[in-house]
Length: 385
Image (cartoon, rainbow, N blue to C red; front, side, top):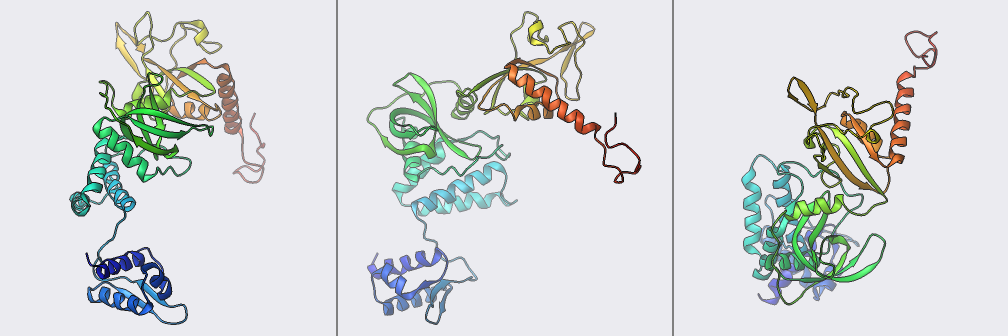
């Protein structure tokens, strides 16, 4: 490509970034004089690119609306962002009814990419997994933007694709920095964040890392064989649910895993059938597991969402075991109440006290009436007894 043509395309890229650009600024960025900038702007106008000229002391050039889309100049980061956006939109069902439009748009962008960048983007798309089912938006959202560096994302995706070990520089939640080797199994998008899961050969265990906390990634010599078993998305969810936190919570909930996961998704809690002498569908029989005033012989507590199985002329209550870890417990009582399923708390006792306090607050609010003069009966007491 001749240098003048390259500069004309660079001018187009500068104008596409938005806003008004002065002739002096453009001349400095392109390394030419102001007269040449005006000539380059004329070349774009000849190509039907809607370039507008603004006169005056602070005038210059800007890109205006046109009757057709002008040629787009995309950097590596922008190309990656566009392709990932199309994939995510297709996955979550956020695109328009013309479903093929996203596929043809992605194909067009992929076709014009340099071979080097195209291979690396293919590696990202081939190694990416989502924790949310297809057609559903991701549950939850990150507390703050989680944007990994493009170089880190591309390097790890390439290592996943070719089963190569990678060295990463990582900063944990406490600010501690370390450099470690990872055998990456896959990239996972979960709740607004990017994760990489893989084996840490130094400790012989699987680990999960947030990509936005990785400052650098470097591919190492050698190769590894990914193990059979759960996929990357399931490994990330399990890793998040079992991460070390201040409190370890164990519950029994009368309901199915599907019902429980509407309020406690897989990334927060692990739901299993509890081991029991009487089979997986029997209620807990340890007196220590029941709240005060209830025993294993007490009638099952019924609820709108309760789950049971009929057999031998009686209903056998289905109880699921729920395990989760949390830094704080104050959010759990409201979540447990929102499930509308009977439950009991095995540990910790602190959670039991919080649930009782939450129930008392709800009961007081339910008994409260509007102040005198605001209700239908002005003589009614402020609080019903």
